[in-house]
Length: 510
Ligand SMILES: NC(=O)c1ccc[n+]([C@@H]2O[C@H](COP(=O)([O-])OP(=O)(O)OC[C@H]3O[C@@H](n4cnc5c(N)ncnc54)[C@H](O)[C@@H]3O)[C@@H](O)[C@H]2O)c1
Image (cartoon, rainbow, N blue to C red; front, side, top):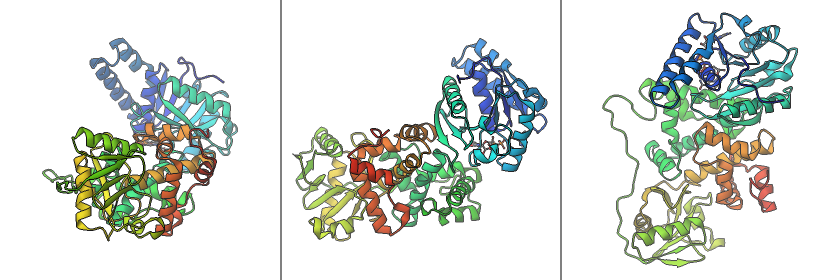
């Protein structure tokens, strides 16, 4: 089965935020588009707004004036579902209720031709359940766009139990021809993105609950060390705590209370208080006019008064040594040993234990003056780095470690001594969730990475990031987190364990 020809008619039901965006994408790709909404005037209004958008794009030179008016003319209001009789594809983007969607699909099936594909844009309802009871459930699938649909490249092509695989491939190829980045996934709670992204919020909220640092500090570390576009708290404030909490609850319930997805009481209290984020003027941050944005905690400048040495065995160490060198700071280069030694201070990348636990580990040459650093996305260019010190670390050693990292040009944030710090712990859990999705056949490794980069703008796919960290190191982090907390939440994916035993990476495995 081939991708839809651009002359094939596309029908969209629901002219809200998503339906209007999907109609715009299809019209821009050259399809004649019919838009229907139960609310009188809603489709017309959406089409007028779309034509204004096309005119603006033409004014900015992003499309020609001719293309803009042609795209605008390709979209029409449908007076009723009967106008869909000749559609090759119907995309449903109505209210998120199974009973309403089921009844719409039953009505559609009675009207459209046998070859018409029926797609749903649902975020959280089983595609299998929507298709159940239809005469031809094989032609039903999910086409899950992200908001705003014209700008976000990801489309999750969701197959239910009955979906015809050839048809899923044809719709995948159609989305590709529309300039999108489609991925195949199975109808499972949260599909890829809304499942794999849970730890981004969940670990942030737990770090806050454990008083690792305040929201502004954790956000700054996730952005400036982790390379994420927004920290978890500013992102949840943008999404809205009511919406984000509801998605967390729904995924948690759908997986029968798996502790990996446990919602946060901190977020529930924000919802209880009506502090829903930007839209209510207050969430983790205050959005009132004149409110002062809190600054992240950053260590005061410390003076480097001891000799330092760096192990260049890891990419992190090599980047650190290069940064010190370009700052004109004398530093001995080693090819083994601790990442950084500054006087008596030993600095190591976190292995998922607190610095205190690790420093007290006599079996591995326990060391009182131990400081752990968090993961950074790009050690050569990161602006900030987070550290935690063992409770037994002397003030002199902590100053020496801080001064050495500052000399390399990093703003240094000191967290409380929580296991795994922020970026490492979050990335380990994102990769672990993606690994389980692959293990369970929900998607392949490439799809998991594309989904997280194109659907939620992650700076790197979690599985390719895991490969870069090294799967044995990642597994150690997860096992240490599991031991530190004694919670099944941090249990490592069997696929991760198997790949470590095989000496392979995620991307070599697919
Ligand atoms: N908003 C998002 O970020 C987002 C992202 C991905 C998927 N989704 C999913 O897309 C769907 C639509 O979401 P939205 O945010 O655009 O909602 P919305 O409330 O903005 O729009 C829904 C539209 O559907 C119309 N409608 C309701 N029932 C109808 C029916 N039976 N027939 C025809 N029209 C009907 C409403 O009048 C409304 O205009 C939902 O399934 C949602 O879960 C939303």
